[in-house]
Amino acid sequence: MHDKQIVLHQGVYKPVASVAEAVFMITGMTIGAGVLGIPYVVAQVGLGVGLIYIFVLGIVMLFLNLMIGEIAVRTKENLQLSGFAGKYLGRTAKSILSVTIVFSSIGALLAYIVGEGQALATLFGGSPAWWSVFFWSLGSLVIWRGLDLAKGVEKVFSLMVILIIVGLSLYFFPSIKLENITYFNPLKIFLPYGVILFALHASPAIAEAHALLPGSQRHFRKALIIGTLIPIAVYMLFALAIVGVGGLDTTEIATVGLSLHYGRGILFFANLFAAFAMCTGFVGLGIAFKQTLIWDHKLPHYLATLFVITIPLVLFVLGLRSFVGILDTVGGLFIGVEAILMVLIYRQAKRKGDLRASRYNLNYFWLIAVPVLLVFSAASVISVIKLIQ
Image (cartoon, rainbow, N blue to C red; front, side, top):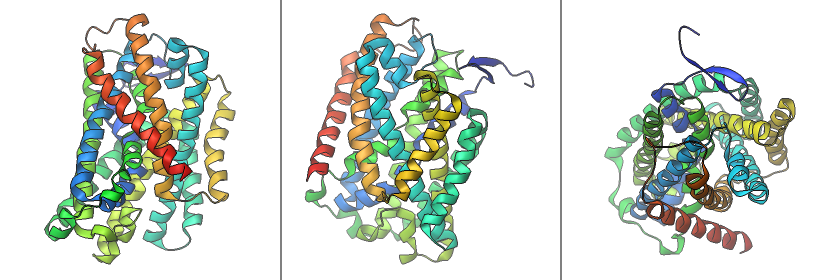
């Protein structure tokens, strides 16, 4: 172990993570397929409103992540979200949250498969469907190998993704057009809601980060805050650059349409970023989902792995390939229900938790809980309305 402290995490001894590794775990889980859908929905409603959306929803997501972090700190066992629900709210809540997480995780993994295929096809040519299957094959291998490999992959890929976004955005800034900044369409005012919430979601990574950073509540909270704020800044920068240049020409997968304004060189690097971003999200989510099935639902390792990697592929083969549609439904409906339940779990954890959270404890419960409840309740209602229209 090279003299590095180890911790027993879900039956396996693993090296304790540093604050930086915990930050990359959270950031890598957050910056995935959603970042590629944000410019399209922002372009449809208007850049100014879209940036406000990203900032406000980002702060609300920070509140939610901090609450989940305190639940993990106050809980003796290493559990994932549905395990927290069962411990603090009972079997019914665990069942509801379990179903929600299953649907949201499958939907997110499906979105990664769809988006990755289009990005790779733009880079190298060929059929997006075949590239999707190729990506699924490699990503499934990493998910099967588990957390150790993923932590290394996420650290490298997260750095590359952030550097590419910043580099591309700075390159695009001189070409931003005034008409793209001032555009506003009130008829699309609710379009960004679900996609942006999807892009900011990283709840499963928080419990994983805490399990591998157990020594200091203060350091864990620091990693959680930094790991949440980085994606907010990155998304705002990326949306400003892409929409400022492309306006209503922005495609559903933002990087695919860059050839309308730039040559093959920029197109290559932009879609390389897209491939890295979706790869980190797919691997991080896949492993967290697998751990949930193993430790919260007691599935054998091989069955959990098989479920995680095969169901999204089956849905893809059956023809569910609308990138923004998948993001919107998962972000607005399933993640919305999950967030509401997490607030209830947090309330119970503060009252009945196993451990003290003296160096983490969040004060003013309702000040952070009310915005989360309002935002995610609205998101769930809006998503249901969209689905039945």
